[in-house]
Length: 127
Image (cartoon, rainbow, N blue to C red; front, side, top):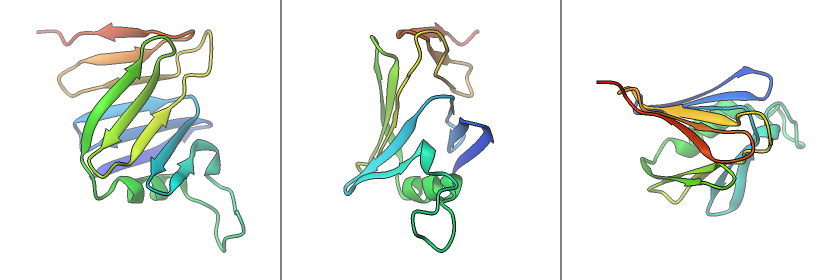
């Protein structure tokens, strides 16, 4: 089961079935067959609906029927894209020259950090 939580202003935590955790402090969006299905700034917005958008619930619904297939990191910018078997994508845009935009890791201890200004910092799992 996937989990998505807003844990501080503009800070999101994604857990993909306990296999990969992703903490994001920069803009993100979820793309599906129809286009942009949800963006990080959509949480709490009304958009003419009867209730405000719940970013956590909406993201979980968009990921619920699919398995993570591939992770692509743009080395120059440190943008990260998670691609799912359904064709849905989570795109994270590292938007600072100084602040780290995101970090992800596995239960085995592997960590990757989207560095400010681009590039990644990698921490290998210790044995």
